[in-house]
View 1 (cartoon, helix red, strand yellow):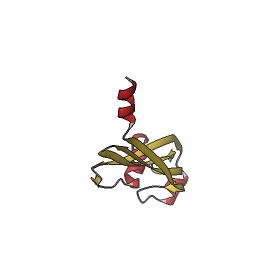
View 2 (spheres, helix red, strand yellow):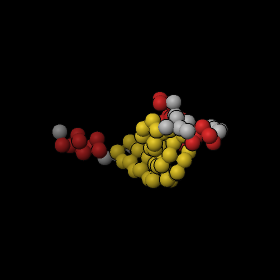
View 3 (cartoon, helix red, strand yellow):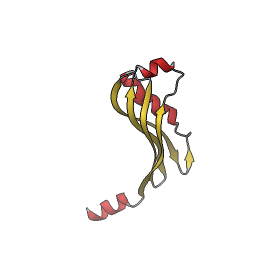
View 4 (cartoon, helix red, strand yellow):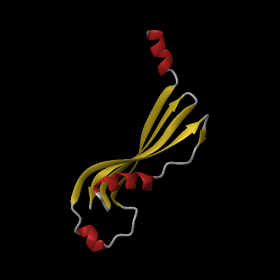
Length: 107
């Protein structure tokens, strides 16, 4: 049992890095008066991930995809106080590269 656990964890690594802190973000053109009148819809997370195999990536994750994922479920138009994190996980010959955004959504 212990040997199996050690073997399973031996090639599993990962890290996450803080990329940015942003005051306000959106992925669309929005009139200033609409932004000023927006109300909070709570704190949301969004992710954009891409798979890689044997060191070859199948595309790159996109921050705008992560923002759209956070905005869409609550009909948001803008995010405030956003943190952007880049996370990488590796499982011997394959892994993931992801961008994660977290912030307060307004709509």
